[in-house]
Length: 248
Ligand code: C5P
Image (cartoon, rainbow, N blue to C red):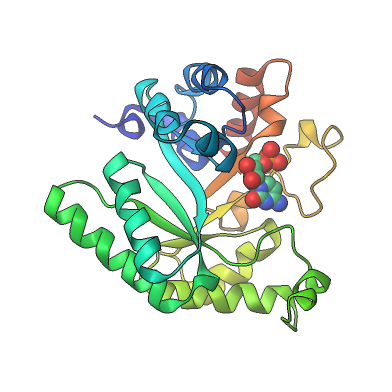
């Protein structure tokens, strides 16, 4: 039985929540998985933890009973990304990310090779998510790198390209949920960071485009990613319970 199958009833809302393990030690990572695993299933291993501890970080989450969202935002030539994706599959991650701006061929090859390897190994194929435009970039930043036009149009067009290439979904900021959902349809998965629960709104203010977890799910997000409002709370487990209650 997978960790997600063990959750039932009201805790199904917890399946929509990905906790960001933005910590600098495996000990802390293990602590948070142990603390939150009855509430949520998915734990994000990002660049910091993976650069520091590599595969050990993924194994630690799995050993503690969590499933892994490997957020390395792969971006390279098609063969290199596809091979890295095959390694992620072998590691047993449930989801991973790549950059849509790596192009249709890169995404198609990655999706195809993951499908083939999953069949060969008789293992589940990880959900592949594309990052469109990083949520930290605005129109001015895009102009700097020679890209003109509104961010949202670019996000929607890259999401469409990802979908055509066989990618399962995208990471999208709160304000992008509705246009991406309209363009890409109900089956396309939307994962949304930039979540600020009502109880944490005043405490962390470096997020410009924010929504509560409930608002994001109502707008059409399939999963939300949350880190600091839970991690930095006095009682992280209670904070996570509040986030889940907002969703259900
Ligand atoms: O801000 P918070 O700690 O909740 O962020 C959780 C995760 O979501 C972080 O790991 C960060 O990489 C990601 N994030 C993002 N875009 C944002 C805000 C956060 O991708 N606007």
